[in-house]
Length: 80
Image (tube, rainbow, N blue to C red; front, side):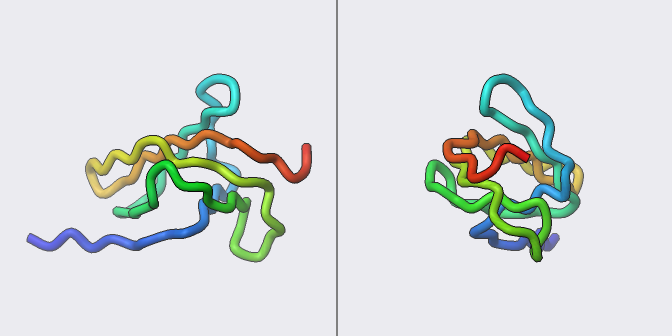
């Protein structure tokens, strides 16, 4: 059985992120996606939007053709 996945170097939220507490967020994405753990990555709302900040991915969970991504926002470029 195949498990196709996509490798990412930027977190695209499409506005679907949910704050867990403080600067920690959870994002659920359709399909299987791979991100580098414990390394700073750019956070953007969409592919064409300006970077909103930088985050460190702390946890990735794959289940039922979905990826749950937990990340900590460490640098915010704009408050809006």
